[in-house]
Length: 382
Image 1 (cartoon, rainbow, N blue to C red):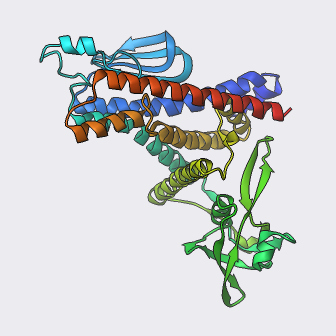
Image 2: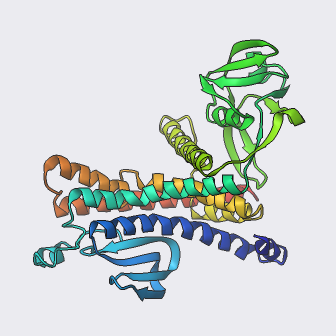
Image 3: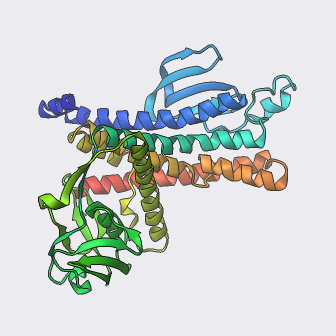
């Protein structure tokens, strides 16, 4: 990403945000839609169009299967349109479907078996999760990972750690029974556990102790000025040569670690949403395209590895978002298919249309709310 740094230094700050944003978003959306596309081809459903972006076509071509591959003018998403779809949201064209002959119905998404339709829809989010695992795995194989043992160097006076009885030199072996292999492992649990009492298994000299610690919520600011509220114990890590190492991974271990990283993002997001519902988290952490663009540009200055890691995290987020049971999203379609499986027949056209309208309203409200959060967030940065 050195060319981005040069552009930033030459006054190309806008391009320095736009190019990383488009790179990250296009990669994630392309893989998501590719998941739908590949399973559709595999199950015999005809794909009419594969589009990256919305609006007027900038460039396109037809493949030998009759699919129109297109790059559109508004690069904020994408879609795969199947035979029988009325629009990019895979809303069926009921009138056209009813006029189809049995021969014409072959290859139509609407007339495909229920299991095939469900597999096609689920393939998009699954592809996002697989992309994240692959990115993390490649980074672990190519770069490795610095690691520091979970040994306490200093304890902040009056902190949660001090109240729990942690002292310099303590080595944290486990938290709530989960093995801790590095200081980062401990940080990940602590940051997501503000106000929650944790059971720490600690090695002190030759003695093993069990301590109870309750991380306190604290607002932290990263190197780019972004604020977030996390749980903290109030300890610093020991950086002596004996406690610092660089981990390298082969293909199998890297894939396992990639899956663990992906699961951590899933679990952290789910935990945040759960705490948001019960009022223990603030919704101001929800961001939209403006914040994604800013974060992409900021992270790009740290290098390509940092940017591709951001793409992995965003891929998981988009996969989870699409699994939400909201009509218009993949999760909404899966909800309809679940109802169809229980009823033995699809929902009526009017019920589906009503659901799609509700889904559209919810998605638009979420987009407006996220964009508002972005504007407020940028304003607070001055």
